[in-house]
Length: 139
Image (cartoon, rainbow, N blue to C red; front, side):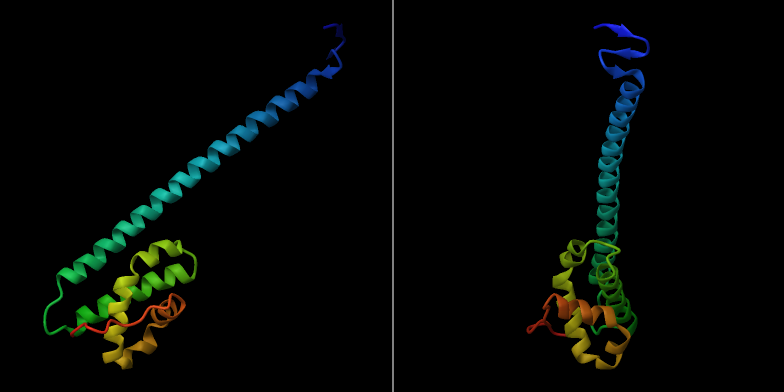
């Protein structure tokens, strides 16, 4: 290569510096994107774990006859999950994980119709996912 002032074989040092800077910036963006994706997955896994714990706790503390407080908590939790999914705050896949328990919620709503007006996300999610009440569930 022949040295010509600040040029080496037709490629300027400024061009080389710019090119290498662009390459490193691109690599940084790729790494940042992968890191952000992993953090999002981890965050959603935490959300799924917390919601699952809440549903499990409610299911384990269910007593016969069902108390109004238990029912309110159960339905509100499902309305909250539905709201988060409908508004794309969490991925739909997290909410669909709970679809079997949404069926139980709809069954409760059939018997306590007066409160269904206060749970719009729950009913909207169940309609969107084509979730139906359980046929063989006793209250």
